[in-house]
Length: 264
Ligand SMILES: C[S@@+](CC[C@H](N)C(=O)[O-])C[C@H]1O[C@@H](n2cnc3c(N)ncnc32)[C@H](O)[C@@H]1O
Image 1 (cartoon, helix red, strand yellow):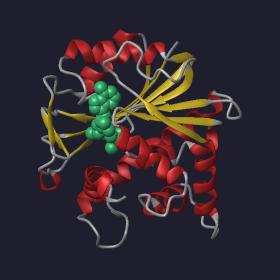
Image 2 (image 1 turned 45 degrees about the vertical axis):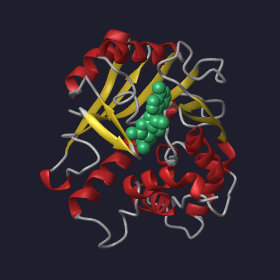
Image 3 (image 1 turned 180 degrees about the vertical axis):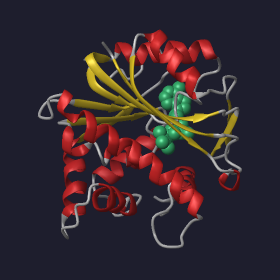
């Protein structure tokens, strides 16, 4: 069974190792991961009163084999639909949802978010968050940002779209990227939110054996301009400059950006 997921597992092990344990990674690598999770923590803590937690639907678009952006979201939404282009990624997420003993272990991420960021130190807080996420995570569906209908199974507009490190790699031109932002806009209810981490300055990245080329290395200013062009109001942005010592062989990024945008 594990063999079937070997590329996906390689991605997870390389991109999402346990960076939070003492001494497991360099301090600069750890800072980068801490920043990613602060972004989601900030978004859900700051804006959760702007939607009805009892009915809100979150779509994770191009989520890969990952659930990490959903850990901070779980208490504040009623339903989560994960989606990705690759079936193996969707299966990996459903393995976690279904408590499969072979599923990837996201426990270090849960501990960091629930205990360190949210300050919930009771002994069962992490277990309760896992349980909450498993109950609101309804499915992992096919997603193709290049298609006219990006996630065909999600038929009505959603309250929140979270899309991370996906739109910056899956298009061949800046024009298509801009078109993708418009599709995201159309998938949201009025007052709906986009929360998105992107890689800055990326011209190529390696994912398993495949190297994706990007002809549109993005700056934070570009992302803001194109989100505004798609109709969004920008509520918050942030940036993490990647220190030279943590640049790697998987991409040529110079840093990361957060954008929180709202459909009027
Ligand atoms: C760099 S990974 C990011 C995955 C995940 N969001 C994360 O944070 O690690 C890029 C993802 O984009 C997905 N992808 C590639 N082409 C796509 C497309 N046309 N539509 C949607 N997703 C796509 C890949 O399957 C992969 O999961």
